[in-house]
Length: 60
Image (cartoon, rainbow, N blue to C red; front, side, top):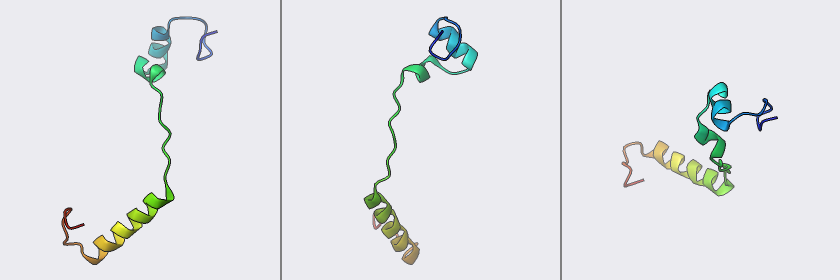
């Protein structure tokens, strides 16, 4: 059996059948973690922008 549960075959053929690029098989995805501190900072920035919508990116 192949890695994807199909009969043995090359990874190239398996990727073609699955409709994905071969890079997808080899790339290790990083898990995304949201830190509570990031949420606090986003809330503070949002509050400041709500009070002063005319501030530019440098002033923010």
